[in-house]
Image 1: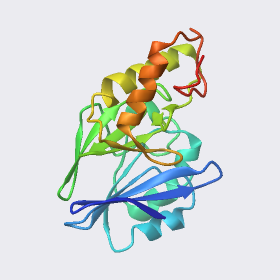
Image 2 (image 1 turned 30 degrees about the vertical axis):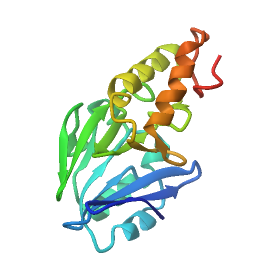
Image 3 (image 1 turned 90 degrees about the horizontal axis):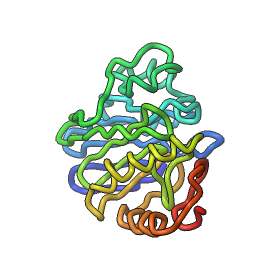
Image 4 (image 1 turned 60 degrees about the horizontal axis):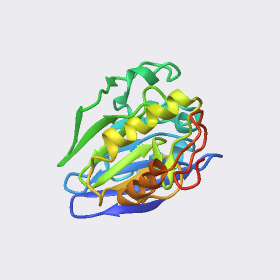
Length: 214
């Protein structure tokens, strides 16, 4: 459990859980101690311990891949707070989410506001959550490249999501992905500019890195 962001308004804690090193995030409003959880990969007990001395309000899902929802049933049962996801990613979640999120929706957590970004490509219902200069990006964007895609059409879609929804944010935005470490958005814009300047295979998909993709 690592504090990855902290200022007068917010604290963001990262928990790396499960066999795929998947990140869950606990976001806490420092004014009210209200909290939310983004993704529930595994080890529900660790997630629940991270919420001690806070007032949980939501469980948010970036997407519905199994490595992000392994502890979801237990976390839902223990917290009894609304689960929020995109309608396109609800098919394997058990009971339907209490909240269906769309692009541009706003969530309030104490004195904090989160904007919902619908960023399809990795999955049809992938979501990112932005509050101020912090962006929790799920598997949409990582340091050095986009999330894994399973077809050229999906790759084109994730690039449209990244360029149209994420790269319009300020350069100093801090990006917290679904696996691994955080990144500064300017670094990802610079890497993508190099990628865009080069020819590449029209069938490109899978695990792509901006600086080495051919």
